[in-house]
Image (cartoon, rainbow over all chains, first blue to last red; front, side, top):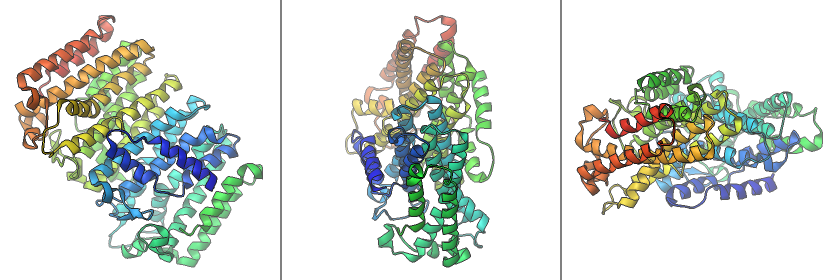
Length: 289
Length: 289
């Protein structure tokens, strides 16, 4: 995973050149190259390999996933949204560049993600690229990430805590949708047929939900220093989370069950080919920051 | 043009269904269906027809252009940007739905634009659709619209007025880039070869610049009521504009020369086929709001 993340970082570094007007590109680069764990790009590359494709075919789509994830972090951190001052251990984008530039940097990363897939992908049939854009658009817009963020914002500060159903809706859209798109689009550019796409989609849904359950647990059990962002925010804002509904121990069990379910989807494949996907599932269940 | 605008409005109305979470879709629809003149979609449809394509092939791309334009208006109007209270004669998006929802509605429209082109386009070779996404992404992101907005924001309130070169950069990126993409992408989905694409690109660059010169003139000569947005803002904010640099009369001459140059590019085509493009050039030169 570290090797892959390095390749992704190199590609991302080249994807945003430092040209006029410098401030927008600096702002995009500031958040894009802030050293995230590159889980989404790694999932995309791994899914492509699992179905017999090669890394080069999936690299532009993998980078696009990180651009979209970064965009969502920049906009979520804004004062009118979650109002966060730190992210990945550094001041948030708007703290450094101002709100106006931060909003535009997010917009530009969003555009670049779609453009980058279509401009840089080689050795993939164009009808597959068109389908990738559909998947990515759906996962990011008003039926995906944006929907999750809206429901999240509108649920906070309500008199009653939201129920498990709403909590799941938020996570499925805010977190799982883009993880799912990363896996599905990796499979698509790798040449997957329909049954493979659907099997990997199920794998992705399980790890997507597990990812958020673990996130909720870490918000309570880890320090801000380890997380690189403000810890304990969910408790302070009286936000509904898995631990607040189920307790920490039961939440941990739920996460582990989801990881097991995810791995189960891969049992029919050659273990050598799905080793990176299996490794990523283990990583997501065991991560500490 | 009115007929075409009606078709575009019908398609846009269907493009954002009123589903859960309703507030984001309501917010998107509020600005998208606020009754703009649909200049970009009309240009897209007209360019497609000029090269022998039909309206149905270009309709999804035409709608996407209006989604992107609307997104840019929503984000430009935000308090941290131009801080505008009125647009198209109605309160701006953030005045009605709040800043958080307005930012997300813009994000969602941006995603939907790319998804919509790829999901809804029929009867066009997929490699052409891939190329359209590249053109649209470049016109909207850090090399297009976003670049223009950044330079615009950073030029305001500076001690000295910006020069003609910076002014042209702002207009070329903030306004002309999307008008150009509308024309070029319409031509691409209509099956245009390279020479046609480049000729129509030149046409689009001329009307794009003319569009902004006329906008600057109208900001001074028309009332807020007629414009549907706050008039006289450029003067109040001491913004560099064509009239402030060249005077109103000379600015009008520049606009008319650009419209004539645009029409000149169409002289080698069958007049019946380019009638809508000629009409749009005339309209852009003569519009009063």
